[in-house]
Amino acid sequence: MFSKNQLGFLYMFISVCAFSMMDLIVKWSENYPVGEVLFFRGSCGLIPLLFLIPKERYYNFYQTSRPFLHFKRCAAGLIAIVAIFVALRELPLATVVSITFASPIFTTILSIFLLSEKVGLYRWLAVLVGFIGIIVISEPGLTSMNLYYFYPIIFCLGLSYVAIAIKQLSSSEPVWLISFYFSISIMILSFFTIPQGWIMPTLKDLFLLSLLGILGGLANLWLTQSYKFSEVSLVTPLKYLALVFAIIFGYLIWGEVPTLRTLVGSLLVIISSVIIFRREIYHKKQVSIPRHE
Image 1 (cartoon, rainbow, N blue to C red):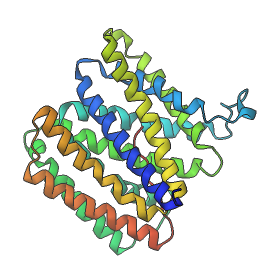
Image 2 (image 1 turned 120 degrees about the vertical axis):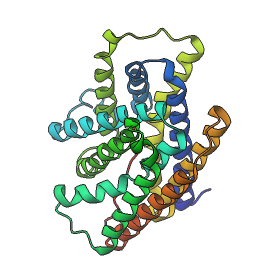
Image 3 (image 1 turned 90 degrees about the vertical axis):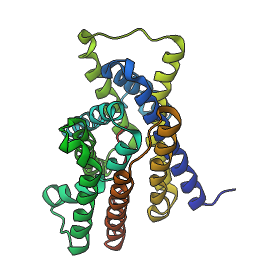
């Protein structure tokens, strides 16, 4: 039998693996319209949620007392997921994953305005270090006006508000309901892209696109379970394994070799987010940052 901390460690590990596989499929799916890929993420992401709805809620599972906050969470989440899907197709895998680690930086800044939190010197220094890391990673794109480098940053901004909204929603709403509304919103958004043209997938591609959605749904649930069973401080560092997976997959499949800038910049971003995370534990806030799906 596993201890609670060991279970939390295991759930975090398989969550990181699932997110990494999902990113891999998103990058592979570049021949399919983004809207079509979003449809599979939203529709197939509902499948794991169906097993979590309590029997007594089968007939009114959709009811919520906080519809407007769900709407804002979904709007921010949609901005984030579209941005990350575009970035994964257009930029090296390791570069995108490195910049996404900056989400705690933007969450810290937004918490000042949205939650009226006080941010001390250590976290402000961490924010500065993180921004330097982002500039180091993105500098080649910014000098050549490659606008795709802005997409992971847009993702971080959207995800930062999602983290704050989920923190507020979690006080009254079950996790499966929060995920349900987000998956439905992804599906609705995808329908507006049909006039731009969808491609009929082959049987193999249909399987992979469906797997993308299921992995996205499961990964967030596993992430939640990880924080439920284990100390946040123990399992959160495992999230940085995603960069290792991104470097390996990027090299083996697309021949992408991360530059020294990417490695140095990602190290600065990781150091920044770790400092922010440690200060949150010190102040007993322990805000967990979910991913984008």
